[in-house]
Length: 342
Figure: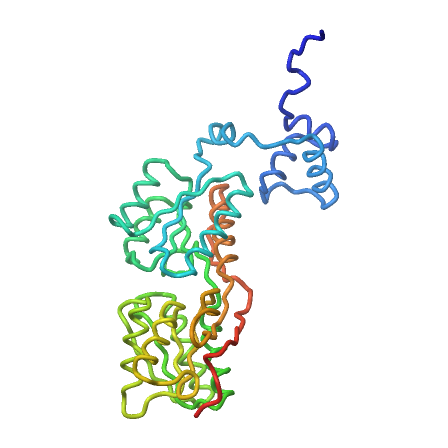
């Protein structure tokens, strides 16, 4: 019986891939980990990828982390999971991180101070970079954090003066598209339901709403709420629809707010869309199961997470912090909650 010394089953190495592809092993390393400094033609990259697949090469993530003194882990701080936006962002971050051999640690504000959570994770070396998708941490605290940990923090769906590393979507354009749609249906009085002006996303959506109403000659009113959840939408609808001259359309600044607006109108006996049309920023499958089905503006939140992870990985490799706006245009998802103005 032949003796098995295990030589035939040894793990393929970068050197093996390089030999099969006919290139230097350092180039193989850079290409396989997506290093932007790994300059190679498309043909060479394809040859390297094919060689890795043929040999069954898999990066030794643990060894790479030890060699670079890294945890090979990203952290993501969310305000919670009450909005479908946060789940989509998390999925986008996780997919991009996994593609680069990184794990993901999630943290929410359910327990403790989120600022302390981020500081502890970075100071203790538990993550290589933190992605902050929250409007609950003060700008001053974030700037101090970035000063102490340069190149380790990326803001997601938020911009702060003095912090360059951030990724956002076209919130203002989404609000403007909503106004254009409602105006096209003949609505001349539209109420925007938004969160506090201290929240960057609300500022951008509110500004897009106001500018579009002014441009189209629409009478704009705003109800500002301290929160951005179902309860806030419900209370805002009750407030807006019980005025002397109620609007004929409501634009909710978040999807949960939109759900609350529908409930608020229903409990007042105001028919949607016969008496008032309702639109919400951000889309979710739940909209198809509401009564009436909620019309929404879809924004690329999954790509938002992926782009944020890409920026964080770039910073870890020594890249330059920058502000990124995901270029995908918002899309109107029409359902049953909007109609011609009464």
